Image (cartoon, rainbow, N blue to C red):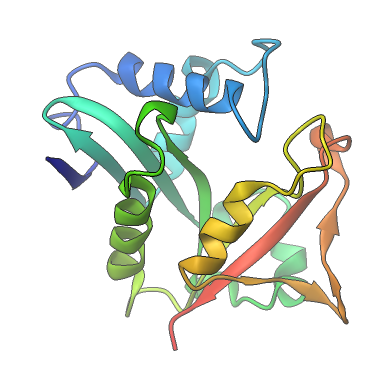
Length: 184
């Protein structure tokens, strides 16, 4: 049975198991980051420290999914864009990491994780902002995460009538979009 638990060192005996899962997720669709240049063991410890809410989907002691929520105002480069994204920095959670082991996708693990995140957020934050790739890397296929987030109640962030597309930074060749959930 899959349970959603808050991250604590007691919930996960080996952080490397979480880092390995993150690496596997990021090597698969939609990221296809196969060059190994972004090992989770190098950057995820800081992401864990910076996050105010970390949820894990677990079956027994095995981690099957994860989500990291950081205070919006702590995420570099976003403060000047809060109005463009339609969020209030002090009451927005930035969903910086979300992933489910490919072996258990389409079995409701991601839905359980996102629903737990929304339940934890309701009343504590007025919005959640997430950034994801527009396409599966190396293709013109829509990133399946977009429909996943829309189904969970997130809306695309628009610039006028168009989807706001980010084409900057170290992932300039991987256009990303933003989706926003609001606690209404």
